[in-house]
Every structure is written in structure tokens, then in C-alpha cells.
Length: 78
Image (cartoon, rainbow, N blue to C red):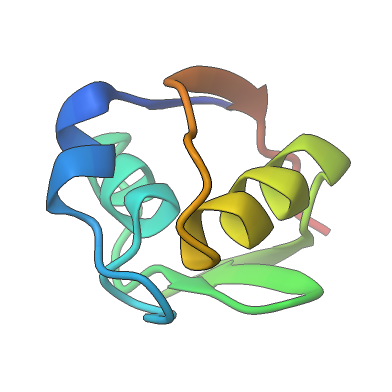
């Protein structure tokens, strides 16, 4: 499944949050219920996946106040 993190998600995201960050907002917009973005796993109501490398880098930069850009990634559940 393709997940797109938009500028709107970035603007509305909260640093340090595992449920209100841009990645979770993008997962919600893709139709996933109750998303959670942890350090090593992304999860949602009926699935989970390892955090892709590009998502981990994005979350690290976002949480530390560094500039980030919109991007798209593949979410493959395990």
C-alpha cells in the first residue's frame, strides 16, 4: 500500500507523538484505523509493519525539528 505524507500532515503533526505525527495522519488518510508510529514498528487496527528506513529518517528529523518534505512510501504489513 502506498502512503503519502503531505505538507498538510507535516504542518498538523506533533513532534514526539506516536499517534498525532505526520506518518499517522497519512496512514489514516489511506484508510487505516488507529495508526501508531513507534521506533521500530508502525501499527494499525488490524496490522503492523517494520518502519521503512525512509520513514524512520523522516520521523527522526521531524521529531528533532529538522526540515522535512512530503514523501510517499510503501507500507507492507507483516
